Image 1 (cartoon, rainbow, N blue to C red):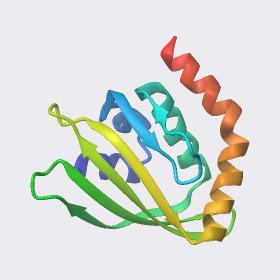
Image 2: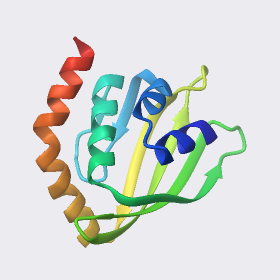
Image 3: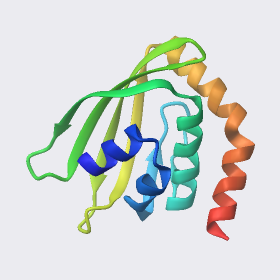
Image 4: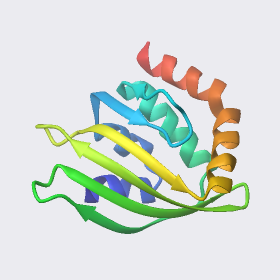
Amino acid sequence: MRAFREAVEARDMDAVEALLAEDVVFTSPVAFKPYEGKALTAAVLRGVLRVFEDFRYERELSGPDGRDHALVFTTRVDGRELTGCDFLHVDDDGLIDRFMVMVRPLSGAQALAAAMGAQFERIAREASGAAG
């Protein structure tokens, strides 16, 4: 997942989006229902990049078949320190088809939920603009 990691670290959302499968399913650490589809997932990730401060990946773990990856990160949201992990699965074409994020501690997750909630209308507009 070097290409994904490098794209995120460079904040290159066009490159990130190019690595997403059309049918990607994104599971947020702060929303019950997963987000489905490339346009919506890309819009959510754009929102995340707007609220994450001092984001950096700390390490990467990969499954033996090269299709499962875990990228451990640290960041801040509204002054709250977070540690998290992006769990990625790639399809037969090497595109990300499942993307789940987990974060800790609870205070960081709450700050993330509030910050992303404030992004909701913009995310919806971006997703519908990309889809149409």
